[in-house]
Length: 147
Image (cartoon, rainbow, N blue to C red; front, side, top):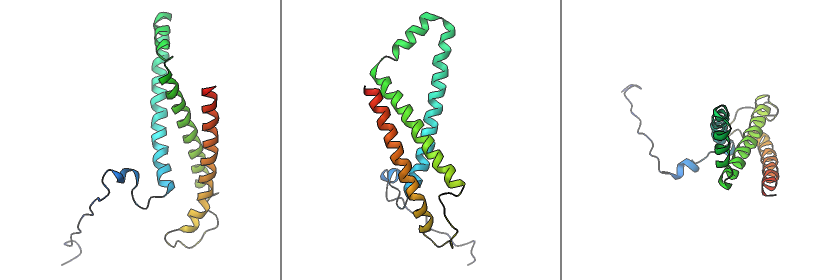
């Protein structure tokens, strides 16, 4: 039997739906990767909605006033907060990725021995710092919305 004839059994997914949230050995950076994409898509969706709503201004003042009166609902205030939160998270995570790509969070080169703990030890403080700064900014924005 040669190498081409050997068939491997597929691994079963024993995690089910829970695997979407907790997929085993994923670290924080993996979840931040997903969060970066989700917030980016949310910001794009908001941009499209914003341009569409502002396009109603061309149709006249009456339609514009009717459209804007819909957004006085408190549900839309929560939506505005979520857009600001997505922007803050996306911006801080993007800054973290820029610092990482420039090499500021990697440190001196070391031999690549799995599980690459040296690189993780260097990246983790910047993740915690960005998380703390994001939490402070989100709290300040929430206080501004409530008051």
